[in-house]
Image 1 (cartoon, helix red, strand yellow):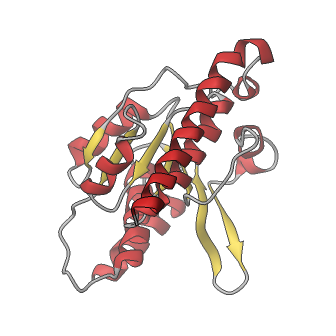
Image 2: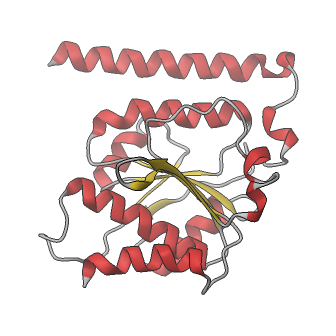
Length: 225
């Protein structure tokens, strides 16, 4: 077990060194990829860490971390084994020049573990009260994501939500804000067996009481009845 742990730390350390080197040579490589869309948030956001079950804390998070009313949400389930994937995805976005990102963890301890590697990143959890038998861990994680999308979109924010096992190679905003997707309020990946897949979702320009915001509110409310 010790050897596995040491290997994991070495892997994360090597990844961090790579990102530092990229940051140092970026001025030589030319302009940031985010300049095309205008969503270059790197160095322009503030960190927030805390429980967002209370509306006041969710508002503080969005005011600190969102950029131009946009926020990128990365879901991390209960296992700390997902930390390396989370780091990679954040580094993908930072290489593009974006950092309006928040990690949604299953609990405070998972955030603490993640923040030992990325001390300046926003990381939150949701301690909303519910019966202990309502969800298994995976279901609780998905419900927390749906609840975040419901709440943030009703507060006027656009939310781009990812699973942790994604890689981002290009700025997604020129596609999401260009024709024809700029006319769509809710965009998601599809899976043949179950229809809409929660691995990637984007909600933009949603009316507070419109159909897209209602989908997430109703999806969060229904399992709790």
